[in-house]
Amino acid sequence: MWRQHLLNSGFKTLYFNAWENDFHDEVVVALLSELEEFKDLNKPGYDSLLHKSAKFLAHLGPSIVKGAVSKFIGDEAVADIAKAASEFGYEELEKKVADFAEKKKGISEFRETLEHYVNAFSEDKPLVFIIDELDRCRPKYSVEVLEHVKHFFSVPGVVFVLSIDKLQLGHAIKGYYGSDLINSEEYLRRFFDLTFSLPEPNSSLFISYLYDYYGFDNFFKGESRLLNDNLAHDGPNFLNFANLLFSSLKLSLRQLEKLLGRLRLIVESFNPEHLVLPDLLLFICYLDSVDPILLNRITEKKVDLNEVIQLVESYLMPITSEERGQKQLMYLMTNFIVLYFNYRNSSSMIDAPLTTATSNGGFTFNFRSKFLEDDDYTLKLLNYLLSTYRTTNINLGYVIKRFHLTAPFQ
Image: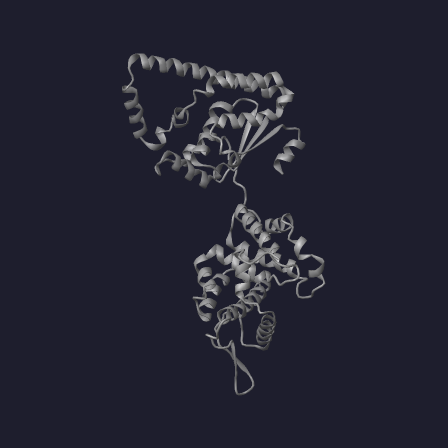
């Protein structure tokens, strides 16, 4: 979106997804390939740029990347350099000095040629070179992109904009140099003239965007589902429960994107005329994110009803205090209790019935829940769900198999 705004304002821009290119070890070649986009605007300049780059590409070595880092990791690196220098003979050292001088000259000529190439088509606005996803790359590649941009591509007329997770990139830097002692904040300060922190994203808006992007309504608004009163509201229910559950997890946008992408594949595995049970499907997905060990115990029926209710409610209680959210969670909890009860007792009855009638015509629950009250509404809801799932022979295993994609696609 921001890149398009720049284009609309007359800027020339390039976009480099570092993560998609970190299979290639030659960072300079990868960055040059992006500049090819403007080759037709200055063909002689681009050819000259390639010619100049060839002078030093063959000589690039780890010294360029690891140079000037000793002040960030202590004196050990300096000692290593001194030791290496002492091993050179006079002639070998003279040759290396000459080679280094030639390398510096080649870099200088490359930078000068790059500046002329860019100025020929960028007019009075700088070329904006956007580098994205750097924090997702291999540590070695992440550091080399930073160092190569600084040493070779940082010229007048080119502005680099790096979109990064600074914490993750800091881990990559420490991993590359093999030391937790390196000050990654100070190291990164060498490369950035200005830094801006983006505000926390609105996860609800992003979930709604992903719902549309992945085309969930292509399934939920199918003709056969809309004509069935039991299925017609699954789409809005899915979106409401997704916002309720996932907004509380404080997931990154990338994590939400992967999670919703998986859920879209899961939804596609359902027959268009079958129950999806959005609340339970989303909750299983939520539980897989916060406590996969508990989900595994549930899958294997190794936790009894009262214990699982207590554990599940410990995750649901902090989610929201809003009345609307409480009603959604109450329905979710009732649904979960009934389906897990059916799941545990699908082969043989090992648990007591969910309710017991009293002598005065009332009833009592044979389980404990902070979400459900002993009232007529809850009893009617329990009985309705028990009757519905008994008729359709559905239990929690039906949802779990769909989540793990072990059920056959319909």
